[in-house]
Image 1 (tube, helix red, strand yellow):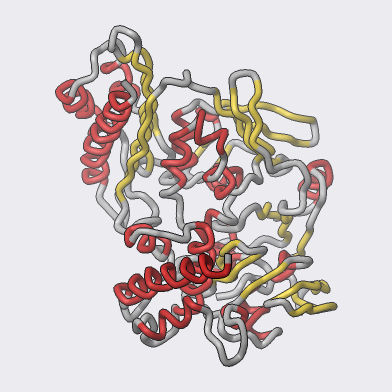
Image 2: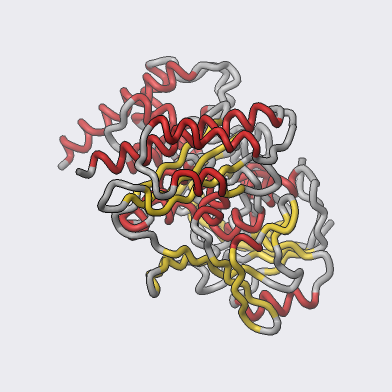
Length: 289
Length: 166
């Protein structure tokens, strides 16, 4: 199908974008277009106005900043994939991105677009959850910062007002010797994951897990941290038995039933994928020594 | 008719000026209907099948997931622009011909454009890498095997060519 009629706006600045958002009724922001364009083509959305962010200056960057990495909202997924800074300091990003759609969609798709679309199976949304990222939002009254835990308010609904725009996301850095893994299960490469697991893990000098972040994607209305699992492995020495037993708690996470899989299957995948991701992260750590 | 704008762009090295286009028209429809370049195919129109893949400033993109107005000032390559001349095929096209990488041909334009970028970024790929590269392109004849064989053969030929010319 074809997009319905709309008026097209291509602001050059964030201020101009906010002014348009305040003035226009039923407007949609167009970032990389890899989710909004299919929705327009299929007429799932019928906006009166499209505000294209592709010409807005200053929204595409990867910046190191006070122990964090800040990424402009319009930074393409491809640029994240090929960033040396991210490869070195944020290696899970590369592993996750290779599972985000395909080269053709990553060339256009943006990090801000993915976070605001907020698909519960989206890899970048899982990473923002796992890192406790901070979303930077600009509106008519200036800038505010939002912890990612407060960003999803409902299924595919971010906590941003109609006259606000996400300009960047900030990821706190983990110590340089942290380990990681991103694993997902989908029917074909590049499809939406039925369930995914993202692991960040810090192992201390005594060989104990000092810190762990485990995020399960594709399960509920938004990716969720497996808090019980994180708590039960922290302070312990990593082992296949520890991971196997601890990951069972993921079966209790809330899950949705849909055409792709029943909730019970997603819960099963959550237990299996979190175990595999922890084992992969641990094996990766072992290879360094 | 809805809101219109004038755009100027380069497609396959040819400059198009003052093209009036309705703002809701996708880049794929603009290329096909307004420029008459019907080699770019439309399968699903929601970014899944890959048939409409073109190179946008040298990077592969789904032209059904872009608006024509977004191409203003940009440089496009479609399947029509791949061959060096009217009677000579690009080595990738030649390899598809020789290894029976085409069946019905519907997915071919999107696969060729995807692979042009892929082989430029990765001139010596493994079979697995080729399979991942075309994972965003659906072949309804399910003839992936010969597409993979043709791509690996083209990679070899392109590398030999590059070695000879340097």
